[in-house]
Amino acid sequence: MQIFHNPVHDKHAGRQEMFRGKLVPCHETPARLEYVLDALRERGIGNLLAPSSPDLDLIKRVHTPRYVDFLASAWQDWVALDPANADTDILPSVWPVRGFRHDIEPTNFAARVGLFSFDSGCPLTAGTWEAAAAGAACAIDAARAVTAAGGPRAAMALTRPPGHHAGADFFGGYCFLNNAAIAAQALRDAGAERVAILDVDYHHGNGTQSIFYERGDVLTVSIHGDPTTEYPFFLGYADERGEGAGRGANLNLPLAAGTEFATWTQALQQGLSAIQAFNADAVVIALGVDTYEGDPISKFKLKSVDYLEVGRKLANLGLPTVFTMEGGYAVADVGINVANVLEGHGR
Ligand code: Q9C
Ligand code: ZN
Image (cartoon, rainbow, N blue to C red; front, side, top):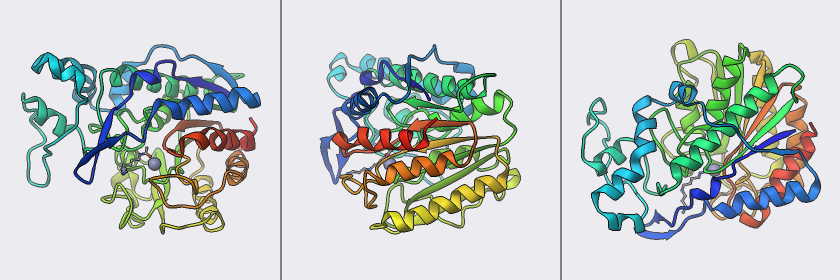
């Protein structure tokens, strides 16, 4: 396993997120990734590699150019409004919902932030762009590694901020650039005709689903907390099957809060069967470990030992595999749980 780890992930360090009308400390912290690195080093799992520079042309074929340009300059624009803003992260406060226009980008900064976001729990900080772009580079390098002649069968983009909630032109849910989607596109560009993305994070991968919803070349599968009660609430239902050329190429497997491994693993089997039926040439695993029983913001009941079995089942697909790092907020156990998946996978 080649593991491309983001050496500048800690440049993204949000101070506070909005929760029930108050600003509270961020769940998505730099320590999460450090615990994973420590666990991998301690257990001798994988070869740790630094990424090359990000391929912006590829990123702009997954995300819209105007969104990428917004992200790249948002912090400078924010501080230009008032130098004192440098002490405060950017949080959205106004959104264009149904009936509003999305075809025009206003010049007002708050309006631009709202146009390109969907929640107020996702601070954009001084180093967000640098960290997110380096993370996308990890995803691209991992995809190119597993498709190179003589390359490894599996590689990981070990990065934060995570990516699966980010859509073609919006951030939210702690995510800015959709690393799993970018990896899938890089796999397609490298010659994989059909790519599957399996999202095992607790939360529905709304960004990934929306990016590929009308494409038949990328199957998106997500196992997640039922959106009637769980974030991101407005997408992730079982009847969302894709549209146009993408009809049949999206599979949502929502499960009730409280679900334990015995039930979760049946959904995993269903997702793996769908990937086999799709005849995928390569797979991207959007690996969130917020399905863990100890996760502070999620409600499934997986135990650390279960992640070994998850890794084994994923390896049984026998496909070139790219892992991206998504959620998981029981910070001290994130390392054990991610390392268990990779150890169980064994490649
Ligand atoms: N009080 C990922 O796992 N809402 N994102 C949290 C906590 C947002 C999770 C509310 C959760 C986003 C990548
Ligand atoms: Zn999550």
